[in-house]
View 1 (cartoon, one colour):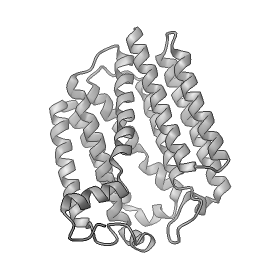
View 2 (cartoon, rainbow, N blue to C red; view 1 turned 90 degrees about the vertical axis):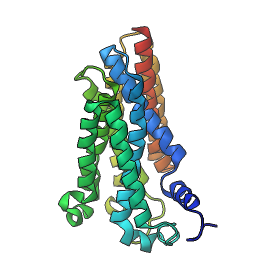
View 3 (spheres, rainbow, N blue to C red; view 1 turned 180 degrees about the horizontal axis):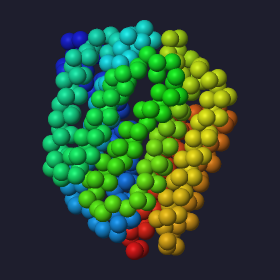
Amino acid sequence: MLTENSPLHSRIFGYLGERFPPVAYTVLVGLFFGSGILVSQSLSQASGHPSSWLGSVVVWLVFFHLRVFDEHKDISTDMQAYPDRLLSRGIVTLGLLRRLAIGAVVLQVVLSAFIGMQALAFWGVAMVFTLLMRVEFGVGKWLQKRLVLYAITHNPIVALLALYIWACSQTPWDIRFLVYVAAISLGSLAFEFGRKINVDEVEGVDSYSSVLGRPRAIQMLVGTMFLAAIASASLIFLLLDHPWAPVGLALLGVFWVGCTAFVIRGRGIEASASCFLLGSMMAIGVSAWSAQMLS
């Protein structure tokens, strides 16, 4: 049982397990970064530099400092709605999280600079956007009353990180990479919708199901997943002028049909949205890798 007197490393790992599961985020970032690098290399028919993969650590750390930003923004609500969390109980503090986030940002700068000035420049753009997210673009109270618009205005961070991944790949620019940006952005938006469609609502915490009603929220999620699937399929079609193209499309189709079926039936909605995002990145990555190997 963690207390305020528990060793620092135990409290930090306890917090990560509760609010930023390292294994889950490592899988997410691995598929995100890996698929982006493979798409970049496949489109340009060029191999990347070994240092490119350091960017995956940077992306992981960006997601972490975004989590810390959210903790600062939501502290008053979370204290009331989730009194059992480690932060609400004072076992970890905002001050400690702030210091960890600063350390994470410093490491992001160092690693991005080591990869190259192009990567550092694109990281800088993404970092500025996260700071705008932190202050909710100066219209936080207005945005918080418009939950769907809130999600849409925050979603571009995914696109910026996708472009950062391209910068890390150190391959020539190809306009078709924007199809990947669209696919990953829509998939992440579906994930965001899915994680806030609740079976049991929490008093004082808005969700898409409480704001829109459960049927409309599910329709919104299904529609977003469909658009993400179309974008992903378009990317695979553009990438794959080789015999393995149907394999990538079939893998994408299996994830889309299966996850959509669960969402429509109202079962495991968050898990289904997560599975769809991971599955679409996997299908894209496998397709790009096979295209690259056979080129």
